Image (cartoon, rainbow over all chains, first blue to last red; front, side, top):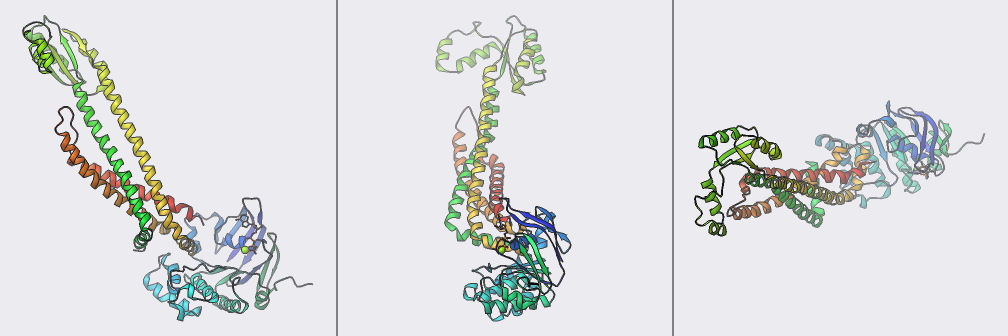
Amino acid sequence: MIEFRDVTVIYDNDIVGLENVSFKIDDGEFVFLVGKTGAGKSSAIKLMTGEIKPFAGDVILNGVTVNTLKPKKLPYLRRSVGVVFQDFRLLNNKTVYENVAFAMEVVRASKKEIRRKVPTILSLVGLTGRAQNYPGELSGGEQQRVCIARALVNSPAIVIADEPTGNLDVETADEIMKLLMEINRMGTTIVMVTHSEKIVNDAHRRVIQLESGVVVRDEAEGGYSCVPS
Amino acid sequence: MYPLKTAFSSLGRNAMMTLASIVTIACCLFLLGVFLLITFNINYIGSQVSEKCELQAYINEWTSDLGEERILKEISALPNVDTAEFESKEQAFENARAMGEEMDEALEGMEGEDIFRSSVKVTLKDLTLADETAAQMAAVSGVAKVNNRRDIIRKVISVTNVIRIGSLIAMLILVLTAIFIIRNTIELSVHAREEEIHIMKFVGATDSFIRRPFVMEGIIVGLIGAAIAITVIAFGYSALALHAESLRDVKIYSFSETAAPLIVGVLAFGLLMGGVGSRAAVKRHLKV
Ligand SMILES: Nc1ncnc2c1ncn2[C@@H]1O[C@H](COP(=O)(O)OP(=O)(O)OP(=O)(O)O)[C@@H](O)[C@H]1O
Ligand SMILES: [Mg+2]
């Protein structure tokens, strides 16, 4: 579960990133975060990964208050949150297999576990045939699949994605969406930031809309923009 | 084995830079070793010099042999007196003639004349208490005068102190320099693997796990530098110590006497510099 309690973010230059934001996301939900550029979507995401701290309020993930967590404990929290980036951030000198395995190695998973888990995840994201390729040899959609596989491989309860389809064409974005929906069906909570009206409107999922750091809409099965009433 | 493997491959990638920094670290550690040896020896030489800076109590001319014995005993019993030795006026005369040709010529044919006095020569346990001990010796009845070489003693103390403090400051500067160099070297590796570090942070690797290969790199550089420095010092110092054996007045430690503390000291400094320098290199990059 993810909970924001009266969260305010103020950056060094006195710019307000978020103001008194509160919401709750239950286990297994699929939630879109939408809003104009500068609305505070990425700020909300960064709070969940512990990258930034709120000026006021609490951010609670699976019962743990992220903002008061000791720095030493933060890595363990991050193992329960998979992150998918807009720009993939794959290691170009490692193969697809190695990129995914790397995420397990650095949290000290056993060799045996790695050999078991990586192929399973690669087959889930449909990349079994590309395991030995390097990221440079893959299309954008395939690279994003690798990034998703890496986010999933340590079995996180939550996957956070900041504009995961931002760099992809419409069709490829659709495929990635199908994959994320599939992962959500299997029980993983997903929070996704997007600027794509089509994706949100097609999905019929919960939408939280931010404007200038404030929640202006929180609607189950909402559309990309307010339905005129 | 992930950290060690990564460390070596990283060092290989920046081979030229690694080599340059190993050589620089070796130079730093060489100088550091030299100052360590100076520090070891200065105490040793200081104690030799201060032995020569003895106090001398001159005995009244009319004192009997028995009186002289009593004076020697009383002086020996003083708390700060290390050794006390009686020197008769005849011995003093001979010693003076033995000091050099000019002295010898000047004293030619003057045997038996009362030029010198009998005395008790004293070395001290603690040089800094020389004044008090001199006063106590003067208070012994039958002692005419105590020759307190306070100026020389003071000079020895202050010179050894200056050398000791100077060495300490030099070593401190060398340590900081070496840490700075290692930090810059390792920073290159950190830079080359910045993306990797970023991803490791996001998938929940601990800081100590991320830091480990870099610290290993720094320690490898430090230890190789130390090994080179120790080798050079060993040859250089052995030769010097051999040469110094021919000196009459001052002795320095032989290499075998200083080998253990020197090797342990230089290796420890190499390890420390490598560890601290590389930690500093990674520190900034762990803040995500
Ligand atoms: N590191 C920072 N330092 C200062 N101000 C920042 C920083 N990051 C974001 N901001 C400001 O905070 C506000 C919210 O930014 P945020 O990145 O959360 O917006 P966003 O909704 O993700 O926008 P976009 O759709 O363009 O990604 C903006 O006004 C932005 O300029
Ligand atoms: Mg953003």
